Length: 286
Ligand code: SF4
Image 1: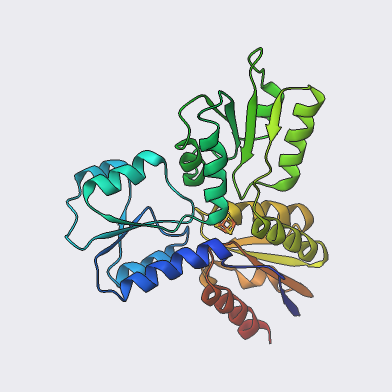
Image 2: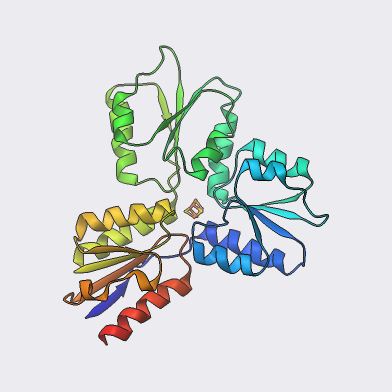
């Protein structure tokens, strides 16, 4: 059996930066909070909680908190709506913004549209914090396309201009399909492709590996949308694709007959976990 790790797997630049920011702040001895889990990975969050980092789980919880004098609130890579950032400051937190610069760029694009009357279309999961954060930069009408079918059903308001951005982790193939639908219908939509390179790189590398592998292991938290997308992509090319959150989730008997086992991991999966899964497979079959 051969094990191949995807060329691009695990922490992306934005996640690495946000997690690093929290670890640096821990050294200051201040009381550290994050608004929402810093990344969509339970292992990372648990490790930080053990070091005293507190997670604010919702706006309601934030409303009820009386922060310590030295409390710092870190905004995670996905970003937050303007009103949450304002509420954190109002509450007396020192706010450290670890929003990924690529997400920040989307915020700016959307914010600029507040003054010129365009409506916004966001392609992505309406319940994902990144999409909620993008939406929360805009005062006007904001439409969300969850999938290609929403673009097919879309009927624009007469005379209205739209600016369309995407969740950074949206599947690029589906995004292109959506753009093609809108172009065919000749709608007045200014498209800004905001899918992140890290996502595309991971998706392309995973697809290439899954096409040659007999079994694929996709590592990441159940709550990680980019991991779920990697799983979908790999599953399309390789029937024996397995989604695991921890090394223990993998039923080794399912990959026993594979000559080539491919491994990939979402952008919020730490290196440590990837190594553990690799070592588990090696330990069983080598
Ligand atoms: S996937 Fe891209 S946009 Fe999202 S946090 Fe990572 S680097 Fe930033």
